[in-house]
Image (cartoon, rainbow, N blue to C red; front, side, top):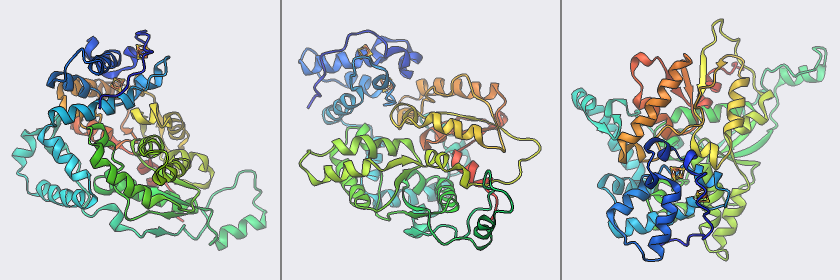
Length: 437
Ligand code: SF4
Ligand code: SF4
């Protein structure tokens, strides 16, 4: 079904200058305004479904900037998702996207696919790895997949570090014996309990993020629950119009997270956060019990970095190096537009005593990764990515932090050795600087 289009687009054009694809291509058909008009025309049957219409609907990063900035309150995001569903039904998807949907639609398939891909990475001749690309990323620059899925390397329930962090409690005189006793004896009382939704990127690609999350939360005194039977949040499926395939995953995740007696359910990726907080609650019919569970879960969703920022005084760090590295931040679109955690994350990085933070002139601009955008539209994507890289180099940063796995893969995949930049998740940076107990 073509989505209903609210009739209130004033054609003001305010969505144009916030749309990364329009800004790059400078063509009306690449703008959110045009996409909304096309959806309306399709609904009114004044234009027919065609592969060209599908291409226009796909040439969008699903970044959410248009929705976040439209004065008429148009929900482009939902309208685009429904239209993509229709386009996929009418015209199918490229083989690579179909395979991705197939693999992500069941966790056992993702596990199987990642094992196969990892073996392929090991056996791939160097020449081929250097000369072939996946979209705009050379195969040699793709991240190495985890040897073992992250969730298989840890228990489902992880207890906090029994000893309190060796922190200096602000304003506490050294003669405060109660405080000194706590420091000496440690405490086996938990500060609280949180659940951790790892998403598939941490589980299969970037296990350093999982290790860092667990290490930091334990140090802060939290008990951590990592439900084993969680699976992909399904955003990649929904963005490709695979609503039916996404449903099973969404039900599995709701089942895994419902009723947990926790202070918060934390995500390390704002796109997973977007799914759990904003998409799941409206996915089911209001009378469906799954809808009630999804709403209850959504109320507890938070991002790990903002959570750390709230409890920053529980962490102590190694002495800062004499020469502090210059770091900068790339704000992922979903952190900025839907999860709205980017300012808190940037402020948290600024607070870290062991680095010098420098802002680029385009911290909040999209990097062009956008799920599979870097694969489907490599030329536009590459132009956007190269601009970001040049601006990060211009401030002489040596570490580039970002909290989205696709941005990390896209940026690191396009860096050259001589750029002298390493891409990291902010959690890995924080974890590496924690003072040992
Ligand atoms: S900002 Fe909203 S109202 Fe203005 S052109 Fe874009 S969709 Fe239409
Ligand atoms: S979601 Fe992002 S890329 Fe897509 S139309 Fe809106 S602003 Fe442009």
